[in-house]
Structure formats: C-alpha cells, structure tokens
Length: 374
Image 1 (cartoon, helix red, strand yellow):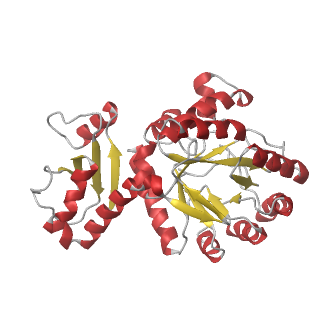
Image 2 (cartoon, one colour):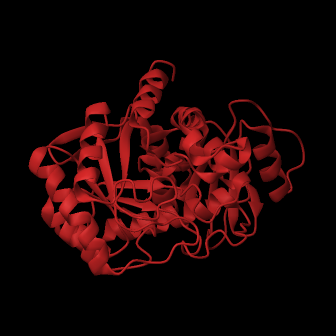
Image 3 (cartoon, helix red, strand yellow):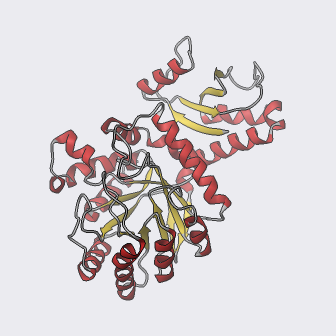
C-alpha cells in the first residue's frame, strides 16, 4: 500500500486523474490536492461522513480536497481499525506537511531543509558527458573540488564511473584507483568538507566511507548491489536513492511509462523503506532526471516535483547540462549553464532541497534568489 499527495493545480494533471478514475463533474480549483491510496487490499466503506466519497479505480482510491480534509480520514472508524491504512495515510500527510522542516546532521553540520543546498559535481572519469577527462588526474580533480568549495558548494559529489547514456560499467579496482586518492587529497586539505561518493558498488562505497566520505549517491537506488545498504549503515552514512529505468548502457532505448510520476514515486518509496529497514537514518530521494527518461518526462518531473514531498525525504535534483536542455534549446554542453540555472530555479521553487550541479556559482545564486521568493 502506498499513499501520495498529488498537486492537481495543473489542469492537465487534474484531467489525467479525472480520466483515470472516470470522474463525472468538475472539481477543479487552483489549490486542489489529491490523496491517492494505491494497492489497497480488501473493501472500503461506500460512504465516509468526514469527507467526500472517494473515487475508485481497481484497488486505488482518490480523494479531492485540502490537507485538512484528508486529516479527517484519520478519525474514520474504518481507518482507525485498519492499522496499515491508518499508518500509510498518517505518514503521507505528516511527510507532506513537514517537508520544509526536515533537518539532517551530516558529519558535524546541520542541514536545515527550509532552503536548498548545493552539491558540486566532480567527475574523475575520462568519459563523462560534460567534463570527461578534465579532472581525471588527482591534482586537477582536488583543485576543482577546492574551487567549488570556495564558490559555495555544501557537498562535493565524487564519481569514478560515468553513467552517461550508453556507458559501460567500470571494474571496482579501476573505480577505486580513480576516486580514493582524490577523496584523500580533498579531506587532507579540507577535513571539514562533506564528500559524497557517487557509486553503485558496495566495495567502492566502503573504501570511500573509510576515507571520510559521508554520503553515498547510488544512481541505482540500492538495486545494482544490494550489499551497499549494509555498508552505508555500518558507517552511519547518508544515502541518496535515485530512480533509474534500466541501466546506463540501455536506459535511453525508448523508455516508456504508464504513469511516470507514480512509477518513480513507488520505486523511491519502496527503496526508502528498504533503506529504513537496513537502519539508514538520512535518506534523500532523486527522481533521476535523464536516467531512462524522455525529454517530456524530464520536464514533467520538474513540473510535478512537489508530488514527491510526501515521501518524507529531501529531494535531490540533477539537471545540470543534461541533454534534454541541450536538445530543447539546441545548445552544446558548454553552452548550457544559464539554461541549467533556470531549470534549477524551477526545481527549487517546486521543492528541490539539493541541487547537484557543475556550475556551483550559478547554483548558489539560484538558491539565494529563490529563498527570497518562495
């Protein structure tokens, strides 16, 4: 069973759910929310006194209203007696309502998510799509990390394996040889720096965490190497769970979704529960822009980013210099930073708390400006 708060203030989104649930009549308003409960087993009362009749579609229920309307469900006798249902609704509403009050302690720093933070990308690879080879050598990589920290990066995300579309995996030994010397050099000069290791391999994660990294950024969302969760727990590290459809080698071979946002949400919810059961405390959710997504999918995710708030995890977004921007505006990789900042602004306005970006200066500008608007 999964519960989700959905923003129906976009008319096209409202119409989509209206068609899916075969709703007769017009309930649309600019502030309209929906509470969707999916995969509900067993029956459900035909009438609930505290709220309008739910709309039904197979084992799913949809309620229109505001947060206050949905809270009244928790007083319903049927819900009270169904512990799983009550817990699912309660958690969903709490997560959504308190999304901007989340706080994580990472290393010795408190991240208070009433604002967004900047994660600087450091690709220690010869073949990454944006800057492959530019920071492949240890000293060049470390110097770039120092510059990003000086420019205002809160986190440095170090990756030794390209995950661009069509890329092949890198052997563990090679990935370790790329990232560990860089992490050591960064932390020897700046011991307070917060390092994220961008890897799907538990052996790479373990060595990076031993060296002082604090976050594991797993683009597979714990699916490529299940042992990685235990490593993260053993080192009391934080975790970024990202959604990917397929693997980097084939993920852009015509990805198709029945319901894009629902599929991503369900994956992030399930993998978040897996991480919780493993004992991992600080969990982030990344919907995976560009990872098994069409151009229209990427824009849909940015537009509907608020629909991931009820997961209860700070949202990470990485749109920096990606091909959906380049193809939309006919821009080469080196020309995409200004457009990236515009999309990042929209993402932060819609709920992103970590901006994973190449141009840290622009990212800092986005965060500061949006904090004075939203």
